[in-house]
Amino acid sequence: MVAVRCLASLIALAAFALPAAAQAQAPPLRARLSACQSGPAASQRTATFVGSMPAVAGTARMWMRFDLFARIPPATAFTAIKAPKLGVWQKSAPGRVSSGFVFTQRVQGLTAPGSFRAQVRFRWYGKGGQLLRPATRTSATCKQPDQRPDLRAGALDAARGPLLDQATYALDVSNAGRTAAAGFDVVLTVGGAEQPALHVAGLAPAATTTVTFVAPRCAPGSTLRFEVDAEDVIEESSEVDDVVERACPFS
Image (cartoon, rainbow, N blue to C red; front, side):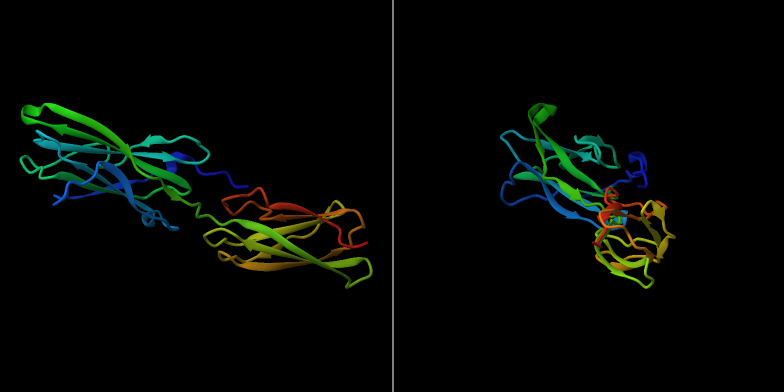
């Protein structure tokens, strides 16, 4: 129910480059995702990409460039993302091409939810700066799951009483998200009449609590309406299931 934050406020990237490494055996021509880590804090969400290229006949120097592409919901296509130390050419040391060139690029502060991959461009240069060959490869995707809480209405239990025209309704509410939810209200509507809200102090990830209402007994064939996080105070990964209707359990 809370609007998704705008993309511009979520992109906060930093890139860290590790030195190129000479290989005893020629490395393959490829771009790969070597590590993908996620977590509730932006600093925990990282992706490490490795580009490698073998030397070719006549090579004097090799260049490599990493460009980051992201797909952030609700977008369905990958688009280029700018970040420090990305989108620049990394170069092998002059006269030290050995059998190949390997470079590692680490990106942190990834947005969640989101998917990230690197496009790596390669260039081989001969003596005099002559371009011998270009190539491009794309890495596998680092997927960052949504870290927000996700409140859900679960099983409903009901019993008659304590008064003749009353019923006790017990609704299970769970947090299916990856982080804790702060306090929120649950509201029950019976026969079109909204009942006083009940407050849940908070709910940890994977936890379930039972919210118990004493309210008018519903009429057979009618429906009960429950609204979780009635005041829209929790930013959730999915809010389509915050309002549910249940058939009256009495016949």
